[in-house]
Length: 265
View (tube, rainbow, N blue to C red):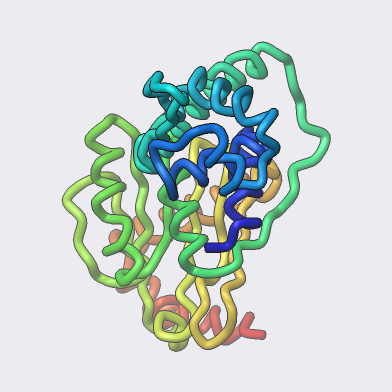
């Protein structure tokens, strides 16, 4: 057990160092007297009484009221659940308070995502936060990961627009297919993903394969509008292809092969 790391996590959640030490001591030995707690935790005996009282007041410990007074902790599971509830309440209150301030950002940074796992986790979080529209472009393999949550949001009334690189079928939302002919072996090596939520935030880039993940996310309006426009443009191409596919193929080659070669870099 890395005591320093655990105490730092306690501090980040609002505990003092002594509160963290006393709670950990109670986990190891309970019920326990103030003397035993002090001896085990190296918290001065003169402070243990105040610390245990604070933990009891917060609901993290209980007193059995014997002579000498004995203390026991709530279980780690109960502690974590309590912290989650407390922080959810506090962040909810803070959001309401901050939302009352008329704020216009003077900058919107672009954040790098460290890997596919982080990118997918953030996508799930953003998809869950959508209120009106979800635009997403991705390959079959990644679509299998997102299918259930996208259907869930569709069922909840959010408009879902999906651009699929592949042939996986969906029975919900607005679905468009992007041909993968003549665009190289991208699927196997560097699958891409583009996601725009409510025209407010986006994730874009490749998820890694033959090279490291190169995906970013941002609320920068210019980049969000650019990625949204890119997806909508591909929706247009997909619709036009369904209607005039043969004529387009005759002029520009299958999946615009002639144009791709012309502008290939």
